[in-house]
Length: 167
Image (cartoon, rainbow, N blue to C red; front, side, top):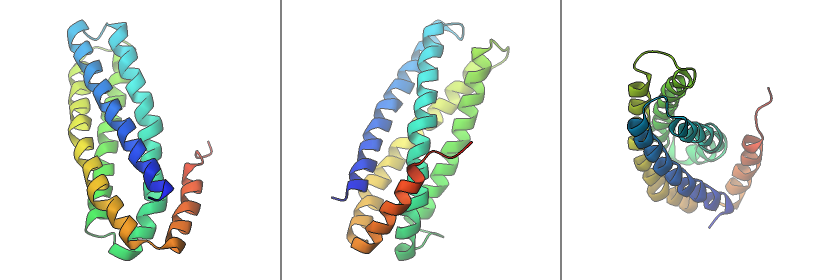
């Protein structure tokens, strides 16, 4: 198996662990309320994982694997189009989660805990199916269709995408 695919599969296992942690953090929030520092700390840790690992994973796919594989299978419809739509949906949920968590961290009044729970539920609902589509459809497709030259291009683009953006 290609090293990049191995890395992507591993990122998926890491994301699945993050989803478990997110589910537990939301349960803790429900149990302790929005003033519970343990819940807010756990939710903040999940935010860091999303901002770091999940964002990097999406960027690496979108800037390396998707364009190269997209020349073979297209990007306007089919698996890459579906996955890109899901990346967009995830980013919207991420923004809602981050806004709600930031409000809770400063003690803002309002329905921020409920908003955070809705965003977290959306993330927990979306990502497992998304991961399954990549693991069972996209990655095997890439393995079947991309030759050594295409993988070299993916690798080059991957290195560029793996460099954090400049401020």
